[in-house]
Image (cartoon, rainbow, N blue to C red; front, top):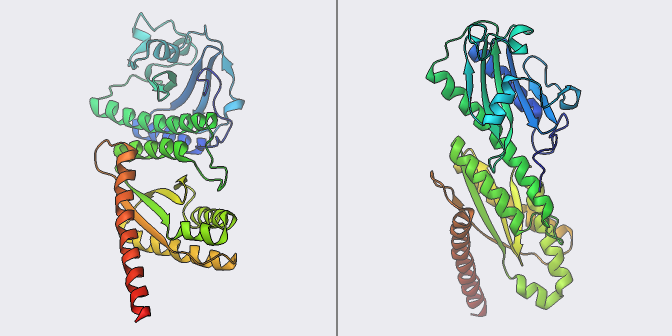
Length: 332
């Protein structure tokens, strides 16, 4: 499991780019007309700035560590796990002697705790100004929304770290196995609910796969599975989640901006798979593909998967019926 008390990130993390956080920080400073904004990680080892405004993506490891006993506004936020807003620090007896007020001329401070997905404090989102401020409720709602986007990224990091503890890849096809697929797909659904985008689940099954195994052996069957996995990886986007449930059942979970393009995507997968089979001298096979879309409410990935499975099953039955009809016609 990921140790939430260790330093995170190194310039660009494997799952998110700190450049994205940099853009968020610069956006905040612009909207609030404030000179300074930080994302700070807080651990038992101390405090360290991950990203600050106008640093053009400052690398995490170049920022100094402040000892845990250092009196800081962000320390108060992290320890109390609560938002802190001080709008006139020099005239507030509780805060007027803070080094940030005396040495750095901080008059206004707004800080929010940032959390790992299981609730532990990652650190703080801090906004500082050298003059007194009067932020309204709309400003608080805005910065909370931006903080939520940062927490979404941490949830992705956390999910990837969880998958490193399980066998996340299918040993044959080198794509996600069922457990990893479920974990990542659920994360994508949670983000879709928060950010309002559409998620599509494709359930993909190879037609006549058992016949292929029985006729040409399991080596041919394994090759057909590997080719399908490679086809999905090549012709879907890097951000799409591709996994194998088992046997000849595959799943792709995609963010979709235009639902009208889905038929093109399905046709592309089918066509490219057939081409790859011919190129590799494997018996030509067809696919039955069903799909489902997320609802605008919280839902488990299993429900989305089941709907796509049912749609695939209907298509497979139609394929069998058409094949039976064609065989009957040929015999006449």
